[in-house]
Length: 98
Image (cartoon, rainbow, N blue to C red; front, side, top):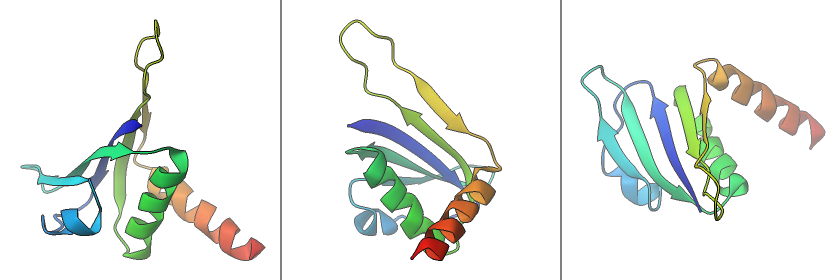
């Protein structure tokens, strides 16, 4: 399991938590929505990001806290604000292959 935090522009309704599975929805004072929770693996994370993208939700940042193996420190991976553009490029390429 991987602990994730996804920051998106705007405030989405907290009731979306049900639609997002085990992902919690919180709002910041600056008007962002923060989605936190656990995903099984990278495939589950990409599935979640694809669902958000299909709704036109703009990503601000994606942080993945890798599950630590015995004796290893936890590693955080944060994607910058341009991750949204990169994600859309990924989806375009994926669509072209189909």
